[in-house]
Length: 133
Image (cartoon, rainbow, N blue to C red; front, side):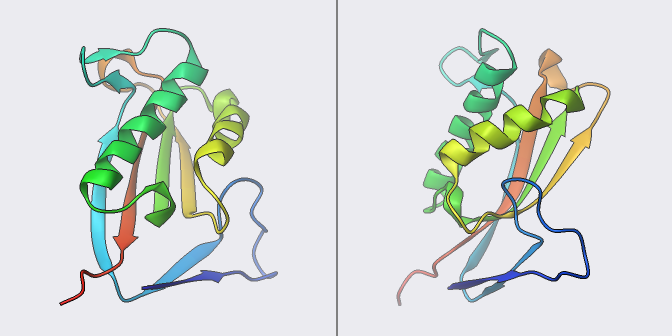
């Protein structure tokens, strides 16, 4: 599998932990369902504020990536849904703790509400190495 970052100065440069676009050759595509900040053991929203919720979502995504045979850095497209877009800089700060360059392509959307009163949800597309035959 090869990931190539697509970048042009004819579009706005990335202003956070993301790339303008990612082209992938080879590999297996895995579509990740949305994860909210549920603690797997209790199925309750993690205690605390937005920081704890963002960390829990990345932990949940990481677990699903692992179950698919990859990790967070195999995500090529990440969608972030926030009930308050003022938390966007916090997402960038925390995301930098979980991802390394090259960052995935990304979208961040402000929405009215999420399941169970969560403040953040994320889904994505992962591309992992094909299993050797």
